[in-house]
Image (cartoon, rainbow, N blue to C red):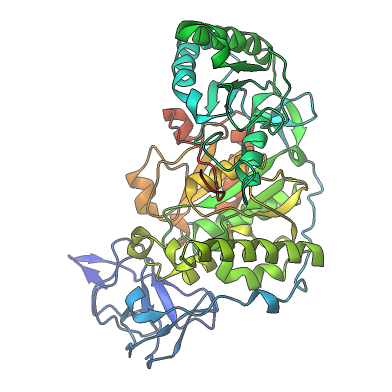
Length: 510
């Protein structure tokens, strides 16, 4: 095929022999009249990432992608047509009571050699990938004062402690004006408590409170020592509040500055996986490559977690077969049921997940998005399931139940102990976390070229045959170890991008 006098090889991707649609992979799409290698002729221009019909569909026919039904044709669709979201009726989600638990558990063979990273040792035996001064708030009321103090710490104190990477305030819209014992309140409380104990903070807990909030120290499992806690209501005016925070920070900076990286096995590393700004190439390039990297991490002894309940719900039948025990399978069902009920109370369902950008990138619905999303979990057995904000308990692959919103998911993964997040994107997002590095992987080369100083790894080269899933997966695996060891800086960290932490709070607000 030629366009504007340039010869273009038509590229399309079919994921499974059962598939009766394929995804156009060419940057810029393909024009009407293009003949694909299997003889299908496009009836109109189809953009990159969007689907072409490989057969004639009658109304009601099942549409397959990834070997699974992603929808039913609600009208006649001719071979070579552009298959869009408006043409499909969504299937019902898998019935949780009928899931097959286990049966497809094939343990991955561990590496013979020991893989290590350079981390900061902590008093509790954990390791950090950053050396940060963390300051936790017990109520939103103190945020303004703390942010003022944090800026002074950065400008006046931090330059004196070159081994400390940054100071991070764990600000949140919680602590008072809430039903502190209401249904679901355990989630934000657990999240704040576990964030304060993140391994990148080196065990140096510092809590700034107001003094009259509902989120009391006993709920945070924090001590009452003045060396650990500062209540602003106990201070005489703004200046004393700030000077007290500065003095407490200085004491901790002196201790943190003595931390040094040492070699540690990957069993001390926890990696989180997430996707945002997804497109139809996510499940073809970036997510499969991340899945291969996840398998390598599991073989090397690390802990890996994937999340986003609404983005696995329609593929949960595939995940249930991979759990190692009946108990883990029931925990997976429990978290799916909880979230189904949560959405139902809000008069919403899983279809609310898919964004206009997802659809512009070729994803027809949450079913197609879900099947592409779970690919990043690789093939390892699922050894554990966590409720939102719970700490990772095991090495290997864990499902950490979280909402799919980037900031809420990232916050909860941090609370679970994540050291590094690998984040895939097709539409593009500058998202980053201040507590842990985020390695961004693009699904298409066009985005990597456009955002050359924001994307860390380009998986788009898989689509045009310039790289393999395994090759990019190994590249991601090596990048994780280098970033964890401080040998490589992500672009987002280079620019100092910081998104807000966002708590998941399903409890009533009073």
